[in-house]
Length: 132
Image 1 (tube, rainbow, N blue to C red):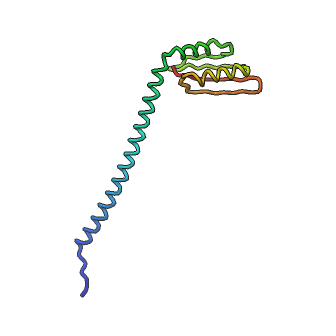
Image 2 (image 1 turned 30 degrees about the vertical axis):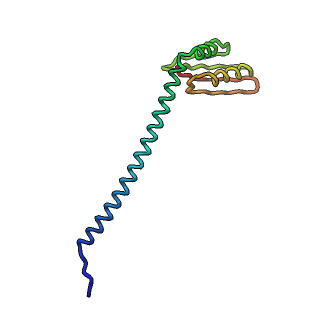
């Protein structure tokens, strides 16, 4: 007896394969969506944490004291007030002055957006942009 080919079996088989592929694709897309949502949530948390730190430290006496120290330093050669930041450039710094300014910048609760340090054997320069 010869086996007869039933077209309905072919339709059912192809439908099953198509549904399996579609389900796999949807699960893949759903996992990508979950990853993107997790990354977005982490970014939002980081932004909120940094915003709260900026708010908390923004009006502190320590910030004002450190900013006044930097603005009154005799080696300050350039000062610019930009949109939401303060740009300072120090030149011809001795070793002690260089270390003191770097220590002040790194130990104060500043939000530093740009910092360029250059130090030769005798002379150093510092360019820094601080958010305000």
